[in-house]
Amino acid sequence: MASRFVRTGFALAVAAALGVSGCSGATSVSVVDDPQLEAEFESVLVSGQSRTLGEVAAAAGVESWDRMYYFRVPVLMSELNRVMHTPGVTWRNMPGSDAEGLIVFVSEGQIVRAVADREPPLYLSGFATSDSYVTPDELAGMPRLAVESRGR
Image (cartoon, rainbow, N blue to C red; front, side, top):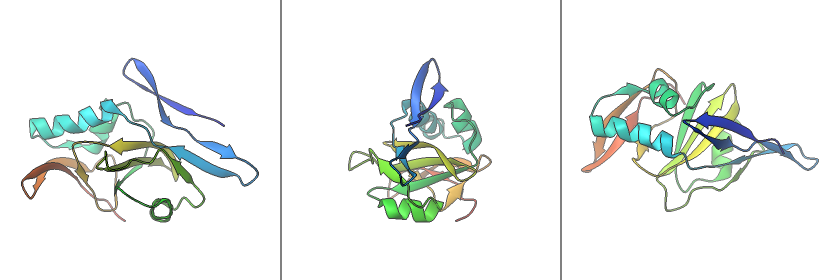
């Protein structure tokens, strides 16, 4: 099983474990926690200043991606695969009630990082790109971040 590692700050963190299992050739993706990405999103909320998703991702060490998807949890694996056109992918370590959602970065149709979103909660319908704006927002008096959609 091959693993993909991404440098975040001074530490190496597992970004997403991608591998081939058995004879079926199915790929599996492990969802990880990424405190640095969460901190970069939090900084937008705290500062009240919009930033591009590309700026947020770069500051968190997320490289080589072209789309970011966001899913509220719980979410079915079949829904993830349908929306992102990734048939046969098996998702491990899916976030539960302790998370707000699931952030998935994709490059040319390949998943490069899958992160449990703990806080602040994001709002995104469809997918975002590096030039999408991340803006402080509020829903029913609760702070969140709105991520500008670039398509479905």
